[in-house]
Length: 405
Ligand SMILES: NC(=O)c1ccc[n+]([C@@H]2O[C@H](COP(=O)([O-])OP(=O)(O)OC[C@H]3O[C@@H](n4cnc5c(N)ncnc54)[C@H](O)[C@@H]3O)[C@@H](O)[C@H]2O)c1
Image (cartoon, rainbow, N blue to C red; front, side, top):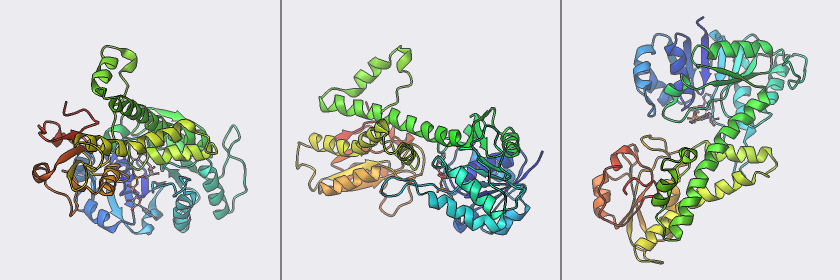
């Protein structure tokens, strides 16, 4: 059955793929966002960022059952309202819970009690209960605990976390099971029915279980990358060739097929969600904290490797070092929290001149690839965009991704 859906934060990396997927299956979707530029782009059939498969759907649905708007009055017609704004951590790596609460407070005058409200952002455990209470107060409902075996809130609030991989959101929304949790049975049923129109399978949890499940999903991935990065640093610092060992370990050995390659493990989610899980466990998440030390230490290691290749300590001074790829993942234009910028910063501290080049980046300092390769004294592969895979590099280089071997 067609639903009228508003998505707050609908022009973001999670909101837009979700809106497109829901419009594709026939729902009436309004993307509500404060980013006027992105709203204009989408209404003009343009994407504000790269997302596989998104443009074709956008062209098919915009102006029909999909629209984008900065006007909050767009919520008035909605049966279902999603919140998908950012949920960062602060400078002490603690969750900024007030950010998500503030957005909901801002929209309270536009919400109606009979609406299904779905949180899609990744939130710190307990936030759904907090928001449930906020909504109960707003709608003057009596309070009841949501941790009871049958959820009984008078509010229709669901938490359905997003687990897509950036850039492939559309494909994954239709492929991945969807975790559904809610503070009332009615909300759980309605959310499950809605997601059944896009997801192949629904997995039901209680709200706090779902909050932790999402954080565990990202912390798991972050730790996996840290293992690969740690092994890379152990082997390479002993002058061993990591990839000879890595390939041998994986060769026809079933239990190592899942072993990721080393690389700058960054982006807006993995680090901060690992820190949220750590904060949840009173900072006693040693594996998560260690993963952070390893992953955040890799840029320093890569710059040290470059320095060694140029002749040793002090040899970076005055050298031009090209960083190929500044986004946080391959074939994507998203540079949020990318560790390639940390590489750039460390090079500057070593008095080298970093040259940045990225086929997907719109930045005044971005050099064409050919010029960067020509004038650089050394090259560090920041991220393996497809344009870099077949390059023949004739200068000293550092490639922890193992694509130029
Ligand atoms: N990026 C991912 O791959 C990914 C995957 C799973 C979960 N998440 C989670 O999803 C949430 C959103 O992440 P994102 O990457 O989409 O962030 P984003 O920054 O790309 O998108 C957030 C959007 O919200 C908009 N916004 C901010 N305040 C607003 C307001 N008051 N009203 C309307 N719009 C507002 C912004 O303009 C932006 O378009 C986070 O909790 C994140 O952890 C992200």
